[in-house]
Amino acid sequence: MSDGTQVTDLFERAVAEVPPALLLPPHAAIRRRIRRRRAAGWGAGAVAALLVVAGFVVARPGPAVEGPEPAASAVASAAPGVPWTAARIDRTGTRITVYAAPLVGKCVERDPARDDLDFSDDRVTILLDGAYTGCADDTQVAARTFELPQSVGTRFLRDARSPQGQQLVFSDADLPELSRTGGWSELPPVWLSSGAAVLALGFTRAGGPQLRIAPMRWEPEPDGRLSPPDHTLMVDGRRIDVYDRSDGPAAGWWSADERVRFTLEVTGGAIEKSAFEEILRGMTWS
Image (cartoon, rainbow, N blue to C red; front, top):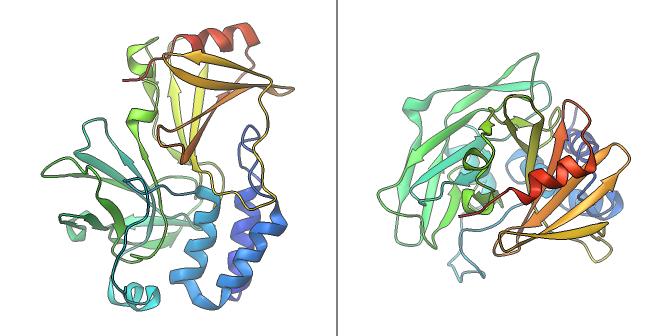
């Protein structure tokens, strides 16, 4: 299978599982991006196609003026390990968890002893080591949490294998504090489906239900649009968009900088709209 065919196949699998509450740009528009990137190979092609679906936000607002960067393919060949496609910053800003990029039919065999983190005045560069191996469940997540000497602040987060790539970076500060409101416990994250670079965060509590929150970067094409909500709620100072879908209610909200879109759905069973809104109204943010 050629690189271009593999990229298209990854894209098709990923788009099929995007949460319905978030209508991403149409296939035709995204395919135009893929065609422009096919010639770049894995380092700038396959990863980029995955990241179009997953999204990205930098750790500080606004672009930075930087000097020339080495070609992504050269960096990828020089650095060992696997690319990471998402990063989660804790509420203190001193812990970063990065998630290795998924591949269809592959899992990541990790070698944490060879991981590396470079902390400078303007960026944090992280190398996640390991290798892709065949496996039965490719939705499982390989990740590593790094401790920083101080808060990440306005620094950029970069993948050592692909410093010009665009990863999804989100903060716990934009997630509701479910453990403090209602006795929720967080489950191990998974990829939303086979080969889909959409991270699904799961939460459960005694008596149910289970919740799934998916953070995604919103990067619309000119013909892209966000589904209008059926109604909205103001919860702890945040606007929550509520979707009354036939297969169950869902909700969505923006990060503080409006660069990441979060969707929330109930999994593992049906729930009444009133019960769903009760969960939403009980959420708090720090």
